[in-house]
Length: 242
Image (cartoon, rainbow, N blue to C red; front, side, top):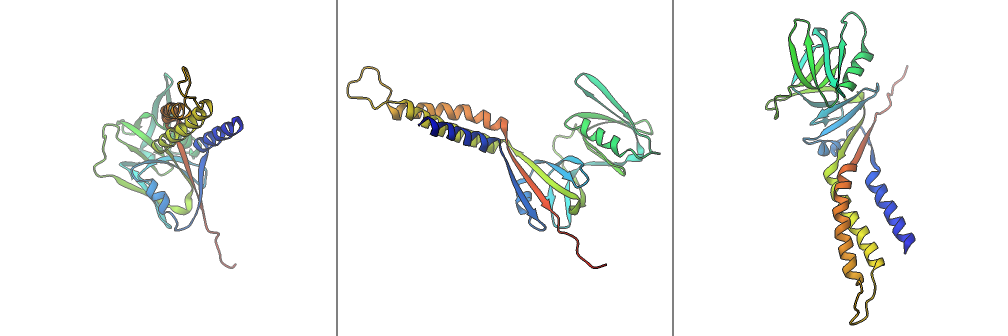
């Protein structure tokens, strides 16, 4: 019985903590689009760049996501944000290749508000900043609900991987598995009580009590861990003759 309990516990932990990985071929993106509705996703490009996007839509030719503001990166002079009580600051030199700098900015400002200073002196409060060699994108932190969003598009051939984290689904899984584990433990710890026993814990009653307790414990644990979904885009190899 103890071996069964340990094995069951390990299977629960693995199920909650493991990542669900899917390999998709071209034109097989329905599962991504269904999961991406009004959710955030982490997109990895074939060149290694990673960005957080909203309302992702992917087709065999193009991949789209929401943005609301865009400006030529050549117009950006400086980016500032605060991290752990310290102010970080980057100056952009439009005369040099600053691909690494852009990646550092995108990584440093992820999940934080930032100040975008343009070359004409204007300062903009931004969030979800994304700087590329051509354009800089962001969302206005004052706008809670985007009323007329603009979609950015890139070739789907540039997308390597898409990740989602579903905390609500994982919370329900945690509650369900916590209940099952508690039920098994409670049933094993209970007794077959004889009639008129003074102090005896009936198996069924103890199993139900432990099951409810396990469900209450598993609910927040499952939500904290989160169920991770990874979609790997397998690009079709180029064909042709020399």
